[in-house]
Amino acid sequence: MKWLSVLALAGSSQAALRFGCSTLTIQRLDPVVEPGNTPSSHLHQIVGGNAFQANMTGDVGEQGTCTTCTFSEDFSNYWTAVMFFKHSNGSYKRVPIMQNTALPNGINGGMTVYYTQKDFNSNGNNKITAFKPGFRMIVGNPTTSTLDNAKKNIGLRFVCLAEKATRFPELPDFPTKACKGGIMTVHHFPSCWDGKNLDSPDHQSHMYATTKEAFQDAGPCPASHPVRVAQVAYETLWDTTQFDKMWPADGSNPFVLSYGDNKGYGTHADYLFGWKGDSLQRAMDSSCMFNACENGRPLKSQAVAAMNKCTVKKMVNEDIDGWLPALPGHHM
Ligand SMILES: *[C@@H]1O[C@H](CO)[C@@H](O)[C@H](O)[C@H]1NC(C)=O
Ligand SMILES: *[C@@H]1O[C@H](CO)[C@@H](O)[C@H](O)[C@H]1NC(C)=O
Image (cartoon, rainbow, N blue to C red; front, top):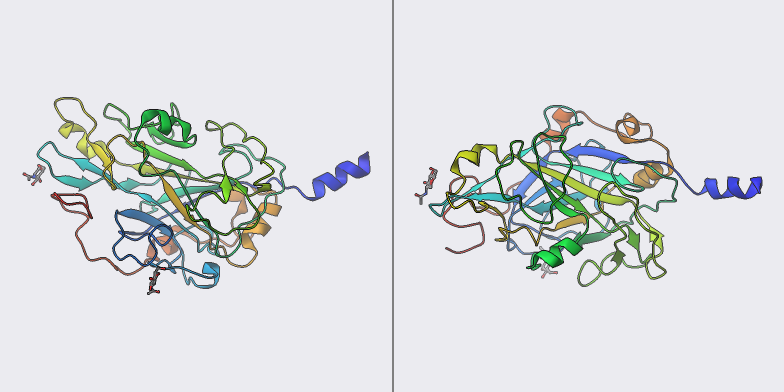
């Protein structure tokens, strides 16, 4: 029996990654859902490697020369829709993005990315298989239009922040009052892979979600999707506070996601794998947790200044920062 348990342990690890990535760019581009479209239908904040462009194929980990993420071998791209404030006079203003708590100071906007065994705060002892070059996936769907369906998207949530560390309650839609510390959006990806397809026509069916409500362990992977990959999750913090005094008199939520959703039911996120070589597998086979994975133990890392310096050129020429008559890509 002793021999058996040693064997079981040999395939498992306890790694959990949590790291910041500053904003790479905010543009209407989407190489997963709308490859080649310049512009794509709605605006995204993209973080990660500078190989990002409208069309992306091949081994992205070999294409980037810099990344906005802490781990300097992670040229993956991570993106979500962007939040706007809609004034009662009809104009829109993009909501600034602020850095999360528990990250080094000075990160420019961006998001927090997790690769964990279970969920956020605990590591486990699973064998986690790294994604393969070319892998991509999305979670959520901008066309989700009912609260019931939004509730079924476990792991796609909003948090009304009292302060940056607020984590509960998690809401399936936008908060209905001004939030003192801003709004956090949370996106959990599915973590069971079919073991074969790097993508699928809907960018989802090669994956299966066993996510439960936040901070709970996921269920087992089904036979159709037997390979446990890392639980990838994003947290994005939106600094809504400058709009508190402009909250509409009728009390309705003034925030809207960049594809025109003021309920938040269609919240979604995209992932395009781009870790260099075997770096992600080495990390997931180790037992490091969060900041302890930095400085070559086992992952190479970089300082905030280097993260903030990495960028890509503007490929879609339009104003995204003024008071706008319509959301970018939407007509009045
Ligand atoms: C990008 O991808 C689209 C769709 O696959 C294709 O039609 C287009 O020619 C590609 N553009 C470039 C610059 O590779
Ligand atoms: C709406 O209000 C904002 C903030 O006061 C202002 O900057 C913007 O120009 C206004 N838009 C219109 C169409 O009046």
